[in-house]
Image (cartoon, rainbow, N blue to C red):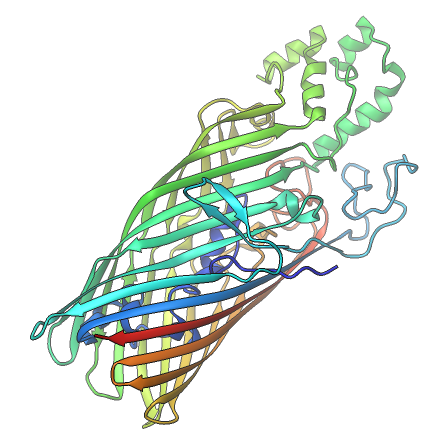
Length: 554
């Protein structure tokens, strides 16, 4: 059954472990301005009205008197995710992963005899994190979402300075799925938000050809994730083999000798299985005030040509929030079994394992996060009296996302175990190595003046991926992406403009088995956010954005 999918306030994903932050790449500039969307976001030399606060504040100097801008966006986000078992698939000899295997409990050999075809685990609805409620809200399958933005600008008579502020969303993204969805091990619910709620700005007219500008953004940030956990690596496969093969003769037959040799791990009611759910994690972090600034320059030597340039600063944040972990029975039983024997207790003490694993663990969590800096420059050129071309190049410093480190207020049982297999884990912290890169990208837009009142627009923006091949995953279902835009602008009178635009973004990705450490890496050290070890993974993402903008002067 195919579900209708929705995009969150504008769009896009996504992210991992908490790569969900990479939603910034997919969702960048999708919710800021409708006209810009239809021009492939190639508007640095031709910023639209008050949205220049974001794209190039120098262009605010072109506004006279009092102007307001109200926009609404309707978005749909379709994310398809697919899993399949390649030839020879197994985790330490076991291949009965219920995600890809049809075998029932009557087949007990651990080797799958009936593999499913490609299994779909699509996004089913949009999710948003609501600050007041401090929780994620599911919007429901098939329900449309409107995202409003607004701005106001004023230039006093005879002044060279225009003042402005705007409310907009540089990044809002989120999605969710029902229980049982195969993709829930990489985020059953995910929400990432950066909302600029106040942006005092100015544009200064230096002379007839040159303008400078700056804006100072005050933004709210939130990150939230609910995900199931499983760890299909070789070490868990070894523990399953010990439980099913070595321990079977000694089950319910506790003896000193077997306890001594087998460290007490046979004294468990439920053994470890690399394909079983090991727990669930809920975490949310936020920061109410995250300041940043934009600096812009606009040079217009003739009516046919202009050059624009903008620098959008990074924003360093200290996000704080809460976490809740539900632990499954199997890891609880493993630790209890170890500590039930003398030799197991000694081994547990040497390895600094926890004395027990509780049903739930909760507390406070924090992380340092840098919203990346962005630079963009472009030109506007009139090819014909009625045909204008815009072309921009841009760069975003995603290399600032080398790793994300979560710091907990106390030691966590599963992390005490996981640190044995990973250098990125301590009993009270978890670091997710991302190693993002900072590629350049470009965009092009055309605007045709059909009449004095009617304008037709088209744009194209190919977005190069910042995610390395060995870090791709289903929580950020993108590799390279393409954005297409179409729009119509109509001028009712000298003071009022109406814009209607539609944007379509698409991205497909193929993650071969064992190729990504944040998805399907094979081996012993793939303990973190690697729930599809050994499987082939494919994603197909489609984002459709429809928007309406109303601008008027007073």
